[in-house]
Amino acid sequence: MHKADIKSLSKSGLESALEALDVQRYRAAQIFRWLYGSGVRSFDDMTDLPSALRLKLKDKFRISHPVMLDMKRSPSDGTTKYLLKLEDAGTVETVFIPEERRGTVCLSTQVGCKFACSFCASSPFGFIRNLTASEMLNEVLFVKGKDPKAAVTHLVFMGIGEPFDNYDNVMKAIRIFNDPDAFNIGARRMTVSTCGIIPGIEKFAREGLQVELSVSLHSPDDKTRTKLVPVNKKYPVRELIEACRRYTEATKRVITFEYILIKGINCSKADAAALGELLKGLKCKVNTIAYNKVRSQGHAGPSREDVKGFIETLKARHVNVTHRRSRGDDIDAGCGQLRIARL
Picture 1 (cartoon, rainbow, N blue to C red):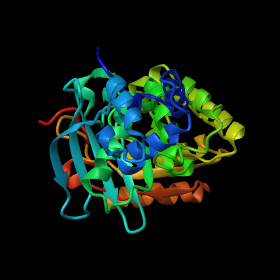
Picture 2 (picture 1 turned 30 degrees about the vertical axis):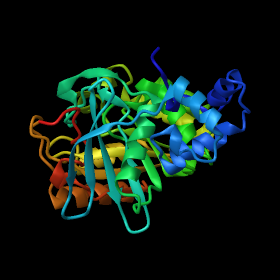
Picture 3 (picture 1 turned 180 degrees about the horizontal axis):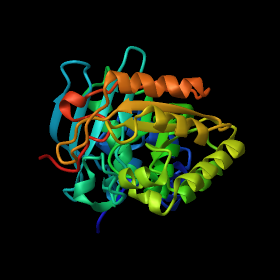
């Protein structure tokens, strides 16, 4: 009989599974601490559990883990990208970004992606499947195990895939990341990024969590945004912004708009003025970043003058705007550069 992946269970699911084995429910918290706090790969290593319980667990469950196929570390900033093979031989890339007071893991949520954003390296490969919650948990466990001294303090669901196209598995993973007996990562230290799936935004607003929401906007007008983010055909700019307004009203939280600056496409002062008008009165901030070169896409990054003019124009319209320095772009680990397979 094929053994179930124990990491596929929520804490309440594990409690119920233990109860069916005539095991006290409180053991679930102990098992969570071993799986996610200590990162053990064997039930035998759960030394404070009775031997009879460990035998029951081994008989019923397996502990999944990915296999590293490749690793690249940036000599300039220490950003590390891992190519991981999953149990079905599918592959994803996961990035660890170290900083002085924080360590951020950029997680993938799908093998491939169906949304075909024109600036993204994974779009030519199409969609293969959703990641399970356990596979997302394993991305972070792998990073922690590879460098135990590097603290993981923040998570961004910004790797390969669209999180809201895999909504239930992403939320299941988030709750385990947040669980004090598991990773104990604060909700405000997690960010989910969407290309603009309005039903996902509306559902996310009802979760009652303080997880940050980031929306890939990239243009204030439908014609340009549709070229960059084809899902705009289904969820056009004005409808998306209205959904974001409803989100901020319901949650009382600031929403972040990601904006990749692409030469000759979306980074003129006129683009910035139109963006400022679009976002007027909305509780938000704009996070700009220069386009990272993707060999297959043919776009170009902005000049310093483009960036300066864009930001100054937004500030003049009282928009909260920041410019993020790209990390790991020298190893193809920057925004939009992740792929589903080694090329």
